[in-house]
Amino acid sequence: MKHRLHRRTFTKLSLLSGGALVVPAIGAAPVRASNGFVLSADDRMLIETFAEAMLPTEGTSLKPQSEVPIADNVAHALALLDDPVLEQVRLGFKLFDYGAFLVGFHFKRFVNLSIEQRVDYIHRWEDGIATQRGIVDLLKKLTYLGYWKDLEAARAIGYLGPVSVAGGVPNLGNAPMPPSDPKP
Image (cartoon, rainbow, N blue to C red; front, side, top):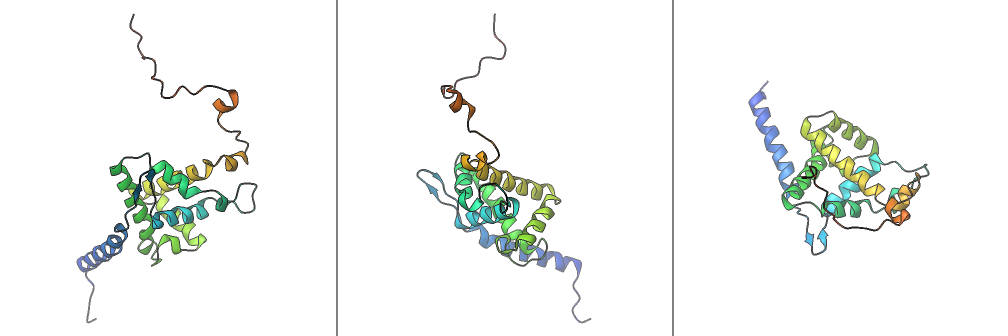
């Protein structure tokens, strides 16, 4: 063998190639509009393709996900977060999307995988290290929140809407909690 690949050389090449894949992904920063957080086009596509894999609504009585603004609902939820947390969420999105290059050796982004490959990739992250499990859990929760926030979609499983609205309970705003230890 003329060129032998040593362990250290392999590790250096792996780190360099991984960095070369992640660095361009970090450049597409989301824009903060005056009315709140706006997802970047890549993040929006990631959430929509993740929902296709995790929310199979075809052939069921559920509202088709194409009619539910999942990405807009997720953007609304993310608008409530602080900037440092948003930056970490955005980095997690990029790691998950571009991680398909190396995890499973698909050599394409998550959004470009077939449905079967997406489901397999998600399962790999569910069984991965703590960071991978945390990122995929965040994506699942945000996707489910984005779908079920739509009241018409939730009515398909019998949810009637907020109980306080149906019962005529007035909104008291952010009322303070009573003290836990009443002083005599």
